Image 1 (tube, one colour):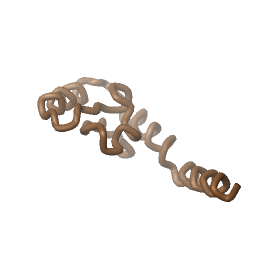
Image 2: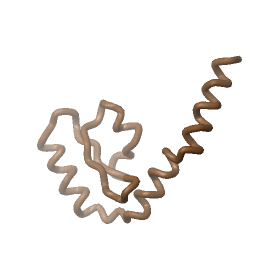
Image 3: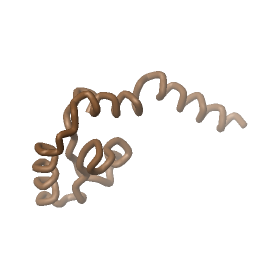
Length: 79
């Protein structure tokens, strides 16, 4: 996503926290290769701009955002 590619993957292994199904990528049913192939076809025609993909990844995984999440977590633990 950060490079602008439309991701296709199986759900249920953490990717569902990264990919918004049919918005920023495609999450196939776990182990269903037919659904995975459907996702590849979808990704090829989805028309999601590379810039939109990059922005979606940056909004979630920029180092400042991750650092803020850790600070918030540590503060909750310390309370």
